[in-house]
Image 1 (cartoon, rainbow, N blue to C red):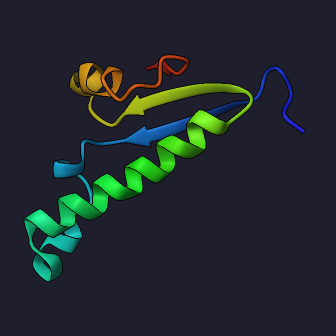
Image 2: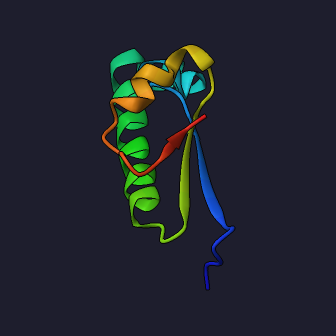
Image 3: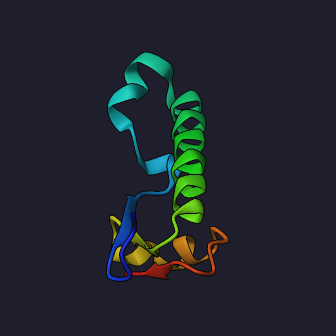
Amino acid sequence: MVREQDALVLFCKPPGRSKQRLVPALGARRTAELAGRLLDCALEDLAAWPGSAVLSPADPGDCEWADGLGLERAAIR
């Protein structure tokens, strides 16, 4: 049961800057693809969350990027 004050916060980075420890094993392109797919999955979960939703980019400079992810109902902080 989700209460009115419950929120789901998704901390995120753009796919090209996340999961960097995997680059030696997968290469930069495959790592970015994997990170993008994982982010898509997390965004689906956030979109389905019945309570408040918050997108929180790891770098405050990425707020514009996060705003472009298409989750209008999510606050960006």
